[in-house]
Image (cartoon, rainbow, N blue to C red):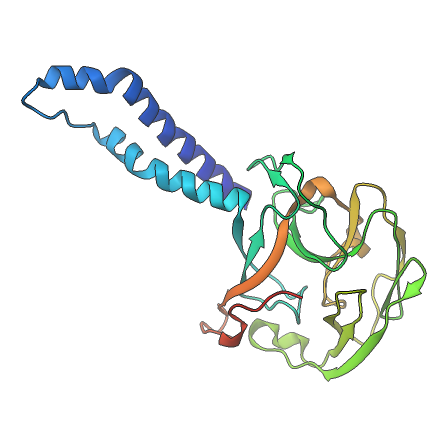
Length: 261
């Protein structure tokens, strides 16, 4: 949410500026005017700035450089992530970035195949989306007959049964539940009877090929192309809460603390 990040940055800077200007230019004048026997009172604006600046700065620092909460808005990552899951996003896994601009200023790491990443899609740069990294720079990715291939090798699949959806994901009931054996990162996926957006794609340098785990209901790289590295926001870590707004209840308390495969 770019607007929330922008508001947080503006409020932090304004409160810090008010506090700094008062300390440098006005606080001593008030103290001198009040005299030795009377304590000078801060103006209301300065009092608010001194109270809120440390809190705002702490929240901004944690949210920008440590971890950020993110709510799953759609069914594209089912069954791994449900609508209403609140997750924590590791903001330093792929390097530290300035808030608002998302410009990287400290390189730390790069996405690995199988990572679930939060990013800003090229065609919706003011929104945060979440998908799984399937293709790395230089890979050739294929998707045919419900199966992913990487550099000519078709991934193994195991059928685990028929999926039963819950909450807002009830519409996915009846989909086939499979385990996709991505090298070193096996994870569940959903498939429907019909296959969508088949093709082959070669990932260019500095980009990634991302897909949702709900293969029959995900707007991902099969439709809009490759994800630039500069659009990455962080790596999804774990579910810390799930609340289904459609039914106004907790969906599954056992998901709290669930690590994302």
